[in-house]
Length: 422
Ligand code: ZN
Image (spheres, protein in one colour):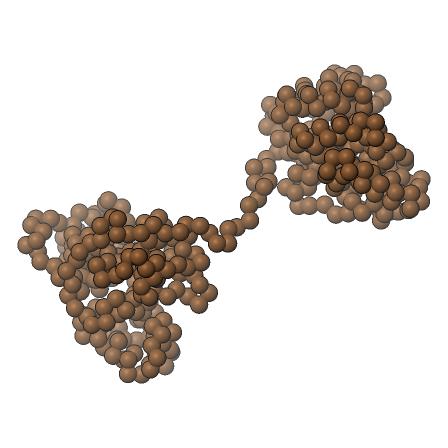
């Protein structure tokens, strides 16, 4: 027991010659009454420190005169006049070294955290510290607003060292050994000290910048939402595509356009507009052939040539493919090298369906994670688009692009077929 206790002191206090100094260290603080006589054991020194115990220890080194405080009294409901903690809570709170955890509670029984300890010890010893000498820890930004400055000064003055990984762990409960070690560095010779609280300006600001910020999730606003994707196939087409884009812009909705290269060659500006307005430009092959009837080389050309062309026109390379007619085979899957996006709602708008039919078909089936197939070559679909958006918005749906859907719903693999992302 003694051996591990010595080792612990050695690590925490970085004392070079353990034997004599460690025993002296404990003996010194026991003689002064900060440690109690029975506490010189490993278990006691590794125990955590309730706030009232911190108050007791600190009260033994504060030069306190009752007459200086007149009739001032402790006002916390958890420290009555009959409380065994009353006298030392009075000393630390009337001098301003400790405050309650709220205006009504001192926090009896609550463990003192490492940042609370840093704050109270800084208050007590502020006049002997160089406030321009600031140190830091990689997790200092996690400390409370009222604590970081104190930790920073104590670190800059060599009083707190933190852990070997560069962290201070401000919210972790402090051990008695750690508390006494800090105290010992602040006051190698125990004495009664007169409290001179630091002025507010004596507590420096500290750097609240996280050196290793957690990655920002660009899709956080979509997680937990009911999402749905509008997709338009076979464009760009005449003035139809621009009417769809106008409608989407008016409603503030992003969609995905599966376009073909042979049409893109005639309307390159429409591809640019799709990308500029925040929609997803996706691959519907170069010449809209049924891929299952093609050789692997021809499939590759239909897909890759289209990706190259779209990237050249718009600056953005498509990330997903919709094979014309939904035609997929094992060879198509092995060859395309992109996730294959089909659909879960298809009003077959290309077959002369009315606007009313398209609207009802889509809105009556819509569920979270669905992919709606429309064509920006079909006037009835263009007329139905705004109504579909309004109805589904009213039901709480959020419209997303296919890439957003993939990102929010766990990703997609090349050559795999997706009908929806539930
Ligand atoms: Zn098509």
